[in-house]
Image 1: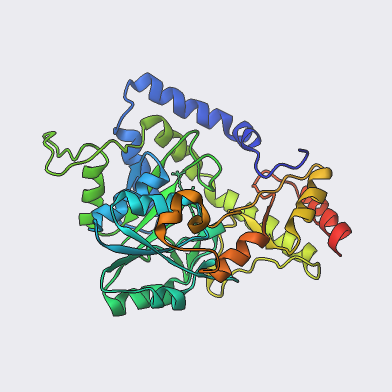
Image 2: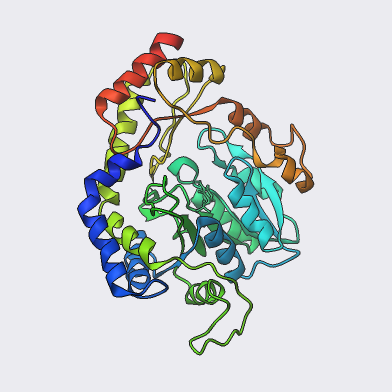
Length: 366
Ligand SMILES: *Cc1c(COP(=O)(O)O)cnc(C)c1O
């Protein structure tokens, strides 16, 4: 593909000197697990998010699971989330033993619809888990108000929302905890797997620290049962380098998204909008288009790669049939899944490439 959706090699070439130095520092130190790199990264990432603490984890899925567990979610509890997301969101809830309850989405934001969430609350509901999908902040004003009224916890899936905010408050700091992923294609990314829980609740931070390493305290005594969900020193050192660049990268994403919107206004696809008072992290630039497959094929013919996040909502995956939902239960979610198309967007992209994608869209759809 001439215009790929992401270009991780181009990014590495631009920061090679810093990354190579960071990796060699770790190699020379002889320390690979839970030492100064992880500790320094946690402090820097918490400060960047505007939270008191951050705890590094092995993946974003682990961050979600440990955040929920540390907040006290347990077997028999219900957690309300969405089906228009990565299956990882739902898996993490199930791994806590909790029951997944799915709310529909607001089709403009493509994030949890607070009215639908409200309708799904039962006596057993313990937490609400909104997803800041594509980097668009969910309606946290309504969702945190709803949670407060009903005595529920909020845990945020921020895997696509690094740097997104609402009313000058970053995602991950609205709920009791926020879970981030540093999967290689995310806005802030490792060269491998990684994740973090962000929180200003010392009990939650402590809980995640215990759970991520066998439940060990400082004497290596397990007061609680835990597995191995650690972030490693190498990835933490890489993340410290990249954290210095992420604001500039997000600013470039914003410029490119603005260019897409300017050039595509008036064309057939429905364009993404930044919510009022919100800052979108532009993890993806996702348009909605009836007859999506035709547009995808047309772009592919011209060497333009696109992706669909996500073609099948979680409740319609065979493995999740046991959640008890059927086709038609989440109408907005199911409609959106048929229409969404993620256009190429990454900080290394040129204005000319965006212009080319837009010209190709106009030439087919008008
Ligand atoms: C990437 C992602 C995850 C999972 O993160 P991993 O690091 O791959 O485990 C969870 N939720 C959403 C919305 C994601 O995009």
